Length: 177
Image 1 (cartoon, rainbow, N blue to C red):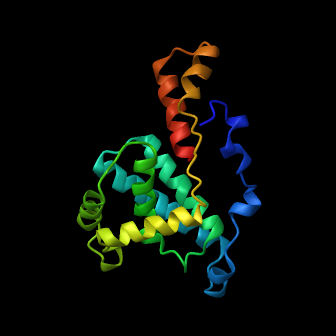
Image 2 (cartoon, rainbow, N blue to C red):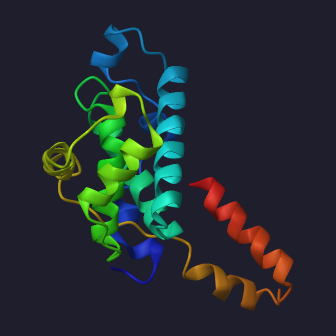
Image 3 (tube, rainbow, N blue to C red):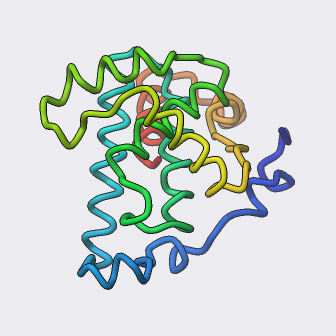
């Protein structure tokens, strides 16, 4: 991975906001508006965060999972890839990519524990099958450049040593994802 965002492959793959908030034609046929699409992505991001909190997964992994999910839906439709399955699968894939391995069995256990609704009932094989589909949708491009390493350097360079200010900046980074 590049140590500088501006020279990284992540920067080269960035999309404009106009490209991100576009509803796939298949979704538009089903009546999904841009606002609906945005709300579904937000809901699924919260789903990933809630699941990760129960499993005790690092914030960096959660940010990677959300990034993967958003990348998938810039290429695929919600009708092709079920969001309630894509979200935990992106978390599973992000755990692997960020070397914070969580077994699919544990992920499925917590999904069932947190959501009694049948719509959220997935088995290990479903997660593993969707993992391959997500990898294909991402073109096996798993590099994500996070600001977590750079933040302490920026704070030090700016002369900020106040702990409350440091916590505030971390909070702002985590909420921007």
